Length: 340
Image (cartoon, rainbow, N blue to C red; front, top):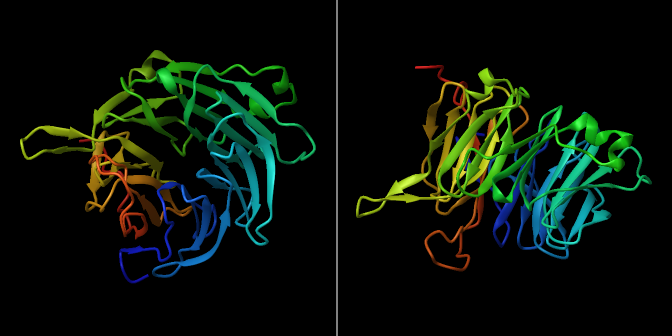
């Protein structure tokens, strides 16, 4: 790649809900409200659309499975699906009773977790395809999921947040009922938009519709909990000099440096050092709201999904307003700055 950033050719035709890089390659999955999942090879400038996979309704989330040839999807058709990316064959693993907001694959436990607006999680044991999925009831509608090698974080309505042990969720006794390892209330006063776990399994960041991000640690000790904090971001001054507050739609941690990126309704992407409590940099403004972010497995690239968020009050998707950009990160570009 000769440029620091390029735009993918052949983008979706409607808003983008999720993007994810493959664990070990530069393949990128993109889920869209146009009822398709797109698979790109981003190893060369402008990328290459390898295939797209049609669904019965808008697709709200997508993730890779055990390898680069396997994907899982969630959407408004209520289905949790497996896609063989080579053949295009789709298999329905389970059906919720409302739209499915999120889907995540755990490599350590070889399970798939889906979260639906019917206020349940479905746990799928992929090594035992004939084994029925386990249903976990939630107290509220889930908005975002994230996991580490050992934990699953579920951010919900009413500022509720559950942290589960993945080994508990994957155990045979899970069908008798699973209790969260921790129940928490969000540090943010307004509705949670996204949650993302630190790659070192130490904690997580969450974001809200009110231009704030909170950083917290799993360790329940008083000392560790005293470290949690929240900060304002993705706010832009109006011509009258008043701060316009935008939702923080997306969070993604860098797999190597442990810093994280945030994407907002203001069209900006910023990189943060969560431990030192410092902003590392902010990139140029995109033409529309940033809806999703994903770092490549080696941390050398950042994919940015741009879609109209209707924050300006204008409805409809205009030409060129839906796009995916791939940014090549310079050495040390996403590295933390250390404490002041």
